[in-house]
Length: 382
Image (tube, rainbow, N blue to C red; front, side, top):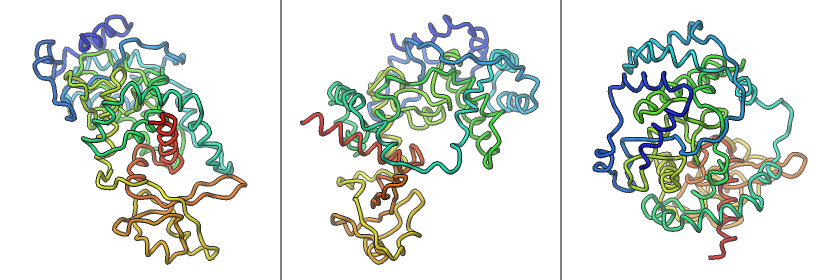
């Protein structure tokens, strides 16, 4: 049975004692096999029980450094918060902290790119719009065509967009990450590198660490069995732990949300995330329209931001000329895709494009999702 797998993982993992104690102190114990079966959620609704562990855990791809996190004042304050606010047992938390490792590679990977390197849309998109990923996307779509069609009917998100996101994120589950989530989140929560937004980022990762422990307690699993990216994202769609709790959907109806091993749950969760972040199901047309811009440069102030704010008339008045007719009743934004020394591409985007940017705050990312989904759709030839 699916719901037994996380516990088996916990018993097989070397840090089982800490997780057992954490689970024992839970005020929300995991469902029994009987109650999980009886309480299956309806498809399309977020389940109360969530699961992020994978049945077959891949090898960890780093060698973390043992540090005495328990001596850090910020860590002790975090432990106090988890005890006072969420009812965790202090001894169990202390044991978990003792087994948490510092991951220097995570620190290096979150550092900003060196200044002065020009953005290049063609180079960026070439990493994602390529034969291997397109072929994997065709297989994923064919294997999950019924679920994708159901998600499109339930949420109004086209199959190609969902396929595009899962393909860009993990090549359809092929590369979901091999870092222990607790390790990387603790490292980034308490040792984030120097940056102008360091305080905000540390708080973000501290919150995600708390949500990871809550998620593990709710599922009665070993927190160290959760593997993900260098920033703590989990599963086929690479949800952060807080988003698993907020937007995860039990789309296969088995009573749990499993983003590591259930394509159905991944599909439903991606669609739900987009709808919750502004996807407009009434807009069935393209999300972006290629455009030309006037030499006057009056359009430059329109670039920037992650929302649709301008009417077609306002765009036209600023010297933006879409290459196809825009529906008059909607609002749009102007985006630029820089190509290094080559000419920049300009596109007009609607609210659905900007919903994708809530997944990753990048024009390049959102356009890669659109283009990969389109390429997979064309390759299917159906």
